[in-house]
Amino acid sequence: MTAQTSLFGDGDCAAVKARPKNYRIPRYRVRVVREETCTIEAEVVASRDDVAGFSRLFLSNRGTESILIFALDTGNRLIGFTEYEGTTNQCAVYPAEIFRFLLNVGAASFVMAHNHPGGNGEFSQADKSITRRLISIGREIGLPLIDHVIVHEAGTESARQRAWWMNQ
Image (cartoon, rainbow, N blue to C red; front, side):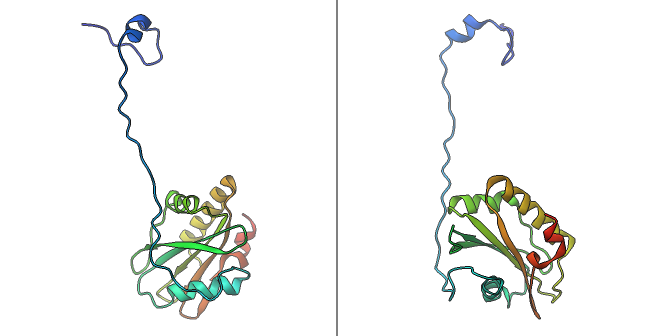
């Protein structure tokens, strides 16, 4: 019976080198699947009104909370979007999933939008927390969050217009 050597230890190097090495490592490929195309009047995000407009288009009549991530190119043109659906009052979203999508489509920046089906237009602590995380991560990898918009019964609210956004 031979003693097990540590991975980086001072084991019997000659014995380790003499064994043939067969590595079975799975290879992965991630693909972005393009689904149906949606028609939006403005393809370039030039103002808060554009962000509010296309956010309302997708989110205004939903009974459950949903989050949309809109990918933009360097000219602020819409590349595409992805959606996360939740329940009546919350939607789980993970930064890794968001940035995986954005990096795979070649985004230069992005906009996040979600709805509040109950009608409240205020940013919750959870809304502020995820916004801050996305700003921070985006800053680190050079993929900035342009705005986070809430769609509610009375209209839309922009995080960029809030005092807490300025402290990011």
